[in-house]
Length: 311
Image (cartoon, rainbow, N blue to C red; front, side, top):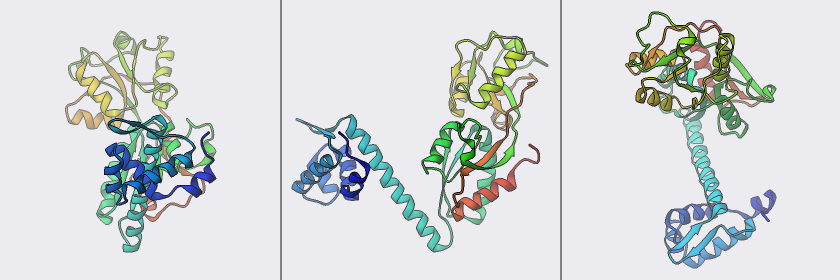
């Protein structure tokens, strides 16, 4: 039986977590002990204490050394997260003491990437030593990271949450969407298109219940068409671009700003299809009532200043 949280907090030490990481990297008590600057008997004792604290074995003893089992790999993963968080804590505190710099973790959905890029460019002019972690994902996953305290803020939509009231939001922009394809698509040079003309082509779509997926589903419904069968589902911008380049017959729905940037690079083209539906606005999102750090507040202000003039 896994120990209770109060028991783990009272019994585990940071140096023991460092030992877990070293054991995973080397698979040897001797080498792990050297890395964390303790004796091999000390490492053996520390590992016994760790496994006793958790109430379960974390490593399997083999002829080649130590190998983490499923529970061990889980423990090592969180040990790395704790170690990383401490490094980020130190970095941010140094920035605060120096009166500049610091660190921000920001989440972003695909359509808001150009807005974030322009905001960070402006922010770096006044805060050149600012460290920024950017995580691009779906709104649902970004909200989960906000809930866990992993993000200072995100630019996404709260409507995908079962409790949107748990967040403070500032609406920014209602993005326009475009249907895009490879420049080699058979319809890339058409003067105008109807959705029915794309019905026989395979689509790259966002995962179910995501706002862009819902927009596309409404478009097909209002046109009296069946939603594409056997679509390729992904929330990754890079994967979408690579798929479109690899297969000239694929089409996808993409935010206008991202489509324009990719078109300028010659990666894809926007097809001349007029969409009836529009996506809901995205917002700057934080946990309700949480006071932002000074660097995060600066980014909030930069995003607000860079927002589009209309929703």
